[in-house]
Length: 178
Image (cartoon, rainbow, N blue to C red):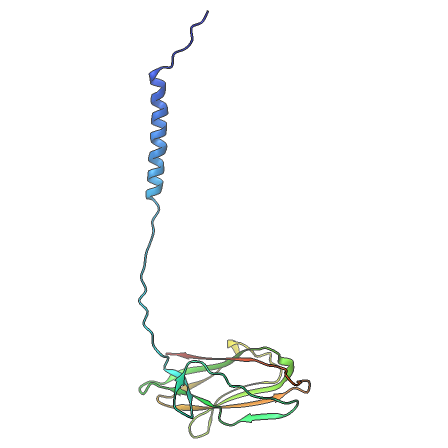
């Protein structure tokens, strides 16, 4: 008859060594994780090119120009409520203007935005009757001269199918490189 085997003490040693090795690998792998931290200090500032309200000389970064349009009729705003001003008395800046989106192009026959300098000469003109030229790739540009306020002229022709209560939103963008 065979005697039951007694566990040997030296069999426990490899088990303890294997556990210690796995623990050590875990600690080393954990030590290989690095976390990076950074801080950003942001300071608010107004851009050098801003919209300028003619009535009270206030300036803003965004504007809303509500207009009523009629079927097949020309609407012209010779001098929109806001101009565009270069507030920097020392530097000229390149300015770009474009129409990013139009919510319902079938309701417009033509949209033209013209930028005029103080003497009334045209600096830039964005126009479309097909509205295939939307987006920054079709931006028009001019040099915003130091301390100058530019007039924004708007020309709109409603399409023949625009009806009472129809709404069209034109999202225009202005960008400066300072």
